[in-house]
Length: 194
Image (cartoon, rainbow, N blue to C red; front, side):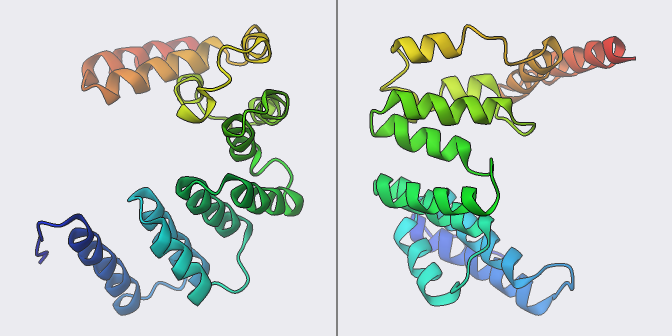
């Protein structure tokens, strides 16, 4: 049973307490300490509780994995400490190339360094696990460089196939509540791919 409080931090504390209790009382051998730490820090960051996330890192995570390095970078980025965030993203990238290219692009765009932002965004767009075009173009981190020649030149290239774009259209329709339209697009996509 959940009890809801009127304050945002109260709801978050109950949510986190619930997660921690589930993890503690229902241990899953496949759910490692790393995964627990990742779940907790992602939750804190997603709720905007960056100070709590960073405090959790200091207290509980002496040797972070690459994914946890990115989460620490995310907390610092959200807090506005862009240079420190970039250092953690670099460390993750040094350990596993390509892992934090998007995050580095966001840092450089925020620091108004379009050449470096485009360099890392290009590497991200060449990767298999790239973000959707609409997600990238609407990311506020790129707002300061989206009128630069480098940005415009980057988007002159067709990074996405027609299948990628159809999937993105379906995702958009679903996100605004048009599930029937989303399903129709996915059905078309399935027919085309047969």
